[in-house]
Image 1 (spheres, helix red, strand yellow):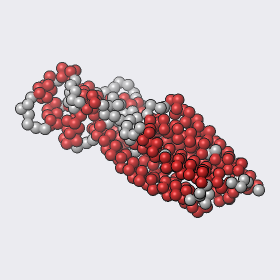
Image 2 (cartoon, one colour; image 1 turned 30 degrees about the horizontal axis):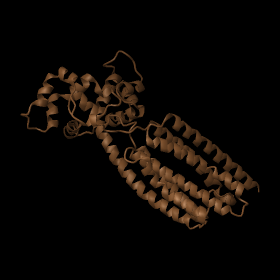
Image 3 (cartoon, rainbow, N blue to C red; image 1 turned 90 degrees about the horizontal axis):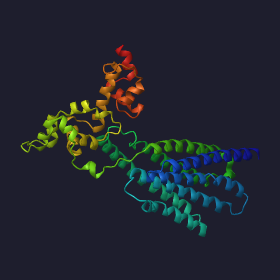
Image 4 (cartoon, rainbow, N blue to C red; image 1 turned 30 degrees about the vertical axis):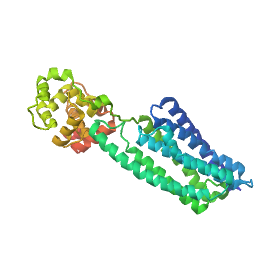
Length: 381
């Protein structure tokens, strides 16, 4: 009796605390971060997930009822509807402009049907069926989304100078975590024929309480990422060939190069004669933390494809590496004190050089120079 009471108290505290935090996070998302569809879906899923923890209180109140198993299974199927919500969120995050909310709701339909089927029929066969379906669907979705994330990352490296707010590689952790939870869920359910069952306290105490707190940790981590996440979109204006009059005035030879039809070389090779490295350094375009391939192409009076070919074929770099090299060159000068009479901290130098993330600055600096900025200063001294 004492063991059961301790178990019930601990489970209620863990569930109640987790539920409260999830509801607070969902309210925060709804009020302050709903620019993108995936943010709104995530906020809604947090609400669904939070009510899932209320199941524990219901089962405590119903454990002595004759229809306990029916209620327990019905609540489990509600948890699976939450899984469907996370699937909707994952797809809307990786493909932010491809599907609308009606199309995404198709992912939820199998779980709704399963819940309604059991609610009216009471046939327990639906439980293993929906578990098998969830594992199969999660496996396919995991593979497809991971492949898409890899392709998206490659595109970003070719188009964006700072990927901090666009990078989706962190979401791979989310996808793998969700799939791991499904595997663990299936193992626990098939081995004990239960989920969050207070009737077998000794076996489920550790698992249930750990699930509550681990859910909280992961949800907070993902919320921080989702709040910062932005969508990289190619606009029609950025895709079109645009000219920059200011650049032409400062570099009169550029217009001749662009309009001279006698050139038989590929267009990106013409950029070699423009000496764009000097232009970029002189204008310090790399100091714009949101610099993209399209924006730089517009500044230079060319288009993104020509500029991309130049960077890839002549410099053998991605746009991300290309622009960060300028930033690191600037950072190195500031560290050496060549271009400034002021004394800056290392974090300030990273920001001044164009990095919008201190972590990215440190990682890029160490990758290029083989040591951290702090070690570079020490060795230089």
